[in-house]
Length: 48
Image (cartoon, rainbow, N blue to C red):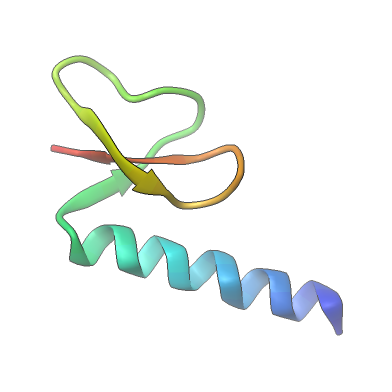
């Protein structure tokens, strides 16, 4: 049950990132992107 909650939180963060015009990356944002939020603890949300 906790696993499902984690998946729904992660999916919500990904959708929130896309609504802000960003993309989820593993590690760091690539140049010239900039960090605008978090998709998960290991994935930053980077603007395009």
